[in-house]
Image 1: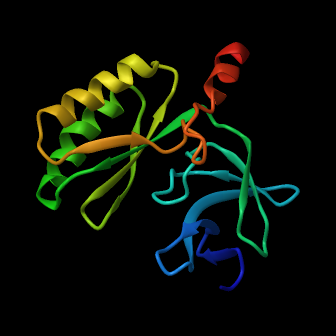
Image 2: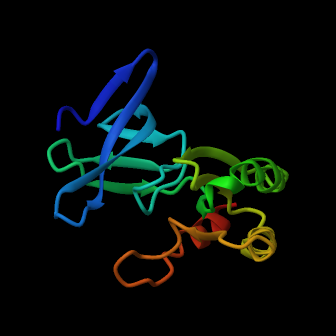
Length: 168
């Protein structure tokens, strides 16, 4: 699979294990990162496939297995929005504008069907979910989910944001 890190101009890319496909083969996701001491990295964008990560997170990656560990959450939610391809313009423009108004950003758009947003947790879940639900409910085929709020095995809330609020 090559090195965990590849460099293209001044941007550093970090490959992490996102899971296994239907044939049991590893699926890697490419993260955009800033390297830090002790082989740790700060994410600059939320990835589309590696669940549990968002922009701003501090991670460590095993260079052999490509498995990652979140050392510190950056205070951002990873919001993934699925929509039919013909909705891409509306998702980018309409939903993107609403999420930017509360500090969010559109980090990636995959194959015209998956929008990857980073949204700070600071406005609170009710405010964020009101925007997402209103957008999705009025547009058939649109759905959204958090990629870093629930444990992928137990489906229990991770509650990392509670520590973030106590530190504020």
